[in-house]
Picture (cartoon, rainbow, N blue to C red):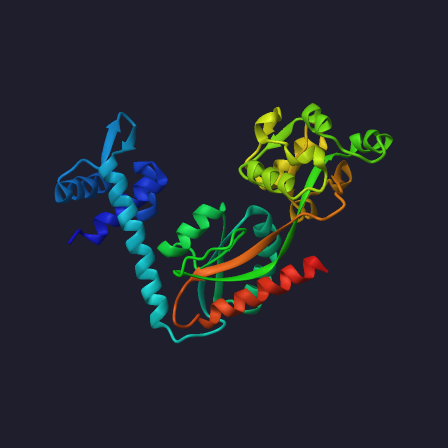
Length: 305
């Protein structure tokens, strides 16, 4: 069995990327950190890091060990949590969702924690694929995704409908109105797309469900990319400055401080995406899960109204 103290030192070293910071965090000396890593490498029979003067790179074997140690850490946390009496207002719970939903839900979950200080919620913004993988691996307890799953390993239930909106610079709105209120493919090609991690997915869904024949055959590769942002809070900033358009859930605009600089193209029929709550299938859902689910449902219902 690998020494857990050496594993902790190794994990901290990989997370900090620095021997000095590792020593400070663990209240050790740098030679002590080096000794733990050396002993762990001897126990594994493989080098775990490649040293380059003052820096280092993790080896493939080191990456495998790090992933194993993280998974073991998560399983231990789950075991300890399961030993506690089931309580609706006590324990940790990890929620994974899109960035726009994280901005909406996190303040509500903080308010819940203020009322129930021992109910601690961790929120991570992630794409659908990672959320589903994290649920199965135990990295996340609850997830909110935009695609239904028939995999029996998951518990799944619909939550609400999330409007998808084509957002463009407000300074272009008068020009669109002069065209009898119509936004054409050529307008979008002239504006260019502000790309983001979900832009291609949102564009495909928006065009597939659009009642405007000019958009039905619009493809991602037909649009010039005029910018890329992977921070949700910043995606609308280049749009506000007139540098392009993008497609996002409506909640992203609700959290943007310069709403007056953004215009929304209104199709005749609203285009939405269904949100699904997922969790790992289990005989009985912990009570604290239901507490957080209830808070999520209330937040989404309030947003809709």
